[in-house]
Image: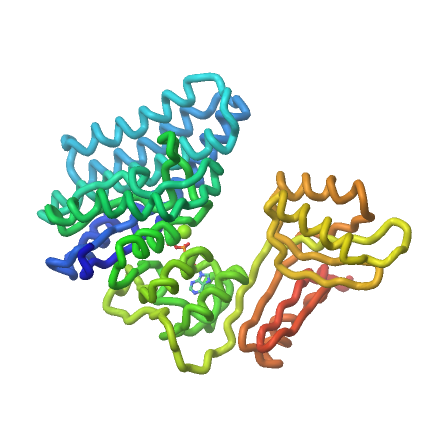
Length: 430
Ligand code: ADP
Ligand code: ASP
Ligand code: MG
């Protein structure tokens, strides 16, 4: 495999409209004669819009076609702005959308998660058609690749698990030939294909992970993820005023940040890159001259405090019904249940007759887990909480974050502080 290829990933915000797509093309033109695998998300908020189509179809509200029509029209509008009224991309987009029209014309027989993947994946199919066509229109040597032909997953719909070995051989078979004829290959993030040729998705926000899978399989020289922020910051700029860019991060630090819920990169992205020592750049598509953040091995820096806020937290206080101690046997059973319902434990604490766990609200699966646990234990459930984690904390920052909140649960482990908090209801004096 060529060892001079790079992988770029462009998220939804970077391809949200015609101007954004022109901007992406301009960024790519800054790398003439380079071989680049370009992994793209659905345009703007298309995935959310397609989720609404799935909801409407499965609840038979009668609105599925109208909702899909909106998504189609939005794509046609962008295509018209980029290409004018007549261009082969229109029939490619049309073929893409016809596939879901066939699905939603029929009465539902298949499982929800399967239907979800067949419908929602169309967002990435359409955005990549658009970008590939636009790059060709701009005289770039670009071609389009159906990622379902190279990323093989099992059939866990909505959370496809990658078959690394088969994906590796499919990538070796299909991609070098394409790079012989083209400099640029445009393909979809977020989706994969099963052995039976069904489409799967890798979990919401999974395009970063797709890019890392391809970087790993192609032994890319680097992966660049282009975002609407200058790089990785000390906190989410939507939540905090005075955040700073972190210039360099180790893989370990990045994996910890994403584990605690930093929304800037998908948590599964780092491992494949670390395993092959592939540097990850997080860069700004608004300011492509900016240095961004470089994530790599052996970083020797002192990190500033980094804050991660996870909303929608739930505390489960689980206790024995007969006042007996919580033993290893109980814990074994509890962990099995969390695993069975695929609920990740964000924080936990074991006390004499109770066990407290903090998890993220995931309505359907969490409700099932709770009813299962209630068969054996007494449960008190506290909802609408926030989990705030500070890596490299200082007392000052913890104090300012906790200010005015009730702390229900806190933990300090080697430089990392986590607390589950509740807003104090405002008392307004008469
Ligand atoms: P994409 O377009 O690739 O899907 P996302 O919107 O998922 O991009 O991720 C970028 C967003 O992540 C930023 O706009 C920012 O609000 C948010 N974010 C959360 N935490 C951080 C952080 N520590 N550093 C930078 N951005 C962050
Ligand atoms: N389009 C998908 C989503 O919005 C995947 C991604 O953007 O990473 O979740
Ligand atoms: Mg995203």
